[in-house]
Amino acid sequence: MPYNVIPQLERIRLATRLSTTLLFFHSTPWLKDTWCSDDVFFQGIDFKMPQYLPDLNEPYVDVALKDAHAPVPRTSTLQRGNFAPNPFLFGLGVMLLEVSFEAPLRSLQQPVDIHTGQEDRNTEFFRAKRVSKSASRPLGDRYTKIVRKCLSCDFGEGDDLNEIPLQEAVNCSVVHELDLLEKKLYEFSILMNESCILRGYQEEGLTPADRPCRVARVRLPERE
Image 1 (cartoon, rainbow, N blue to C red):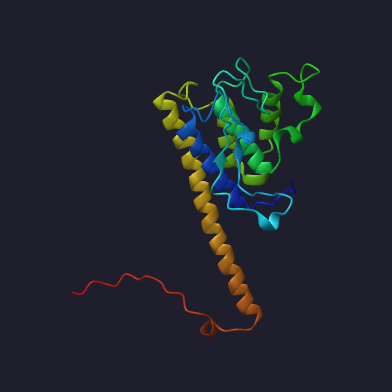
Image 2: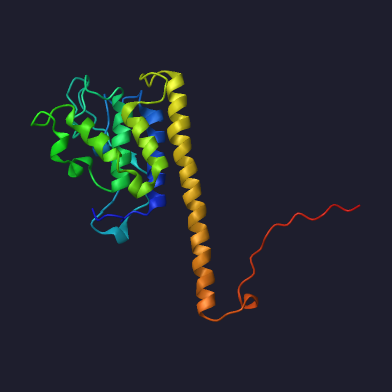
């Protein structure tokens, strides 16, 4: 997928939705053992044709209905016993990285990620940790801090997502922080749009009187 196809604001919105989804579904049959970007899809999406990108506010969790004892195939190599304390939060951290770079984590792999000469269950962990060090480039330091917390389950409340304290910590340090980022980017986009409109008027040589009036709410002084 071409880099910077999805605007920053839309990527932050998607990251917020994914984080909220984890808190809602981690203890349900919709998510088993762990999850990755293969479990999330957008109806009718075609990243090869960015002009037709759908609304990214509505991701879906893709779950195959199979025999309860049948193994569930996943692209993620994450398994129990590796360096990631919580597979669900690690999976979220990986997806947040993929949202940031607009690319699958595997496509960002380098030889240094393979410590034993061949891929094993820890390769994805090393790859994610290395990539997270440069995640501030696309979406900023605040976003990178959120990603690293997810990868290492660094919330100070243990690593069991079934426990209420960890859920509250994730909601505060991940969902709430992403929501704040989304609001700030939205406000910034409005200011940028207004600036572009103003510049357009200036280039056309219009005076302030020629521009449409902007209605503002003003608090009137109280009568004495």
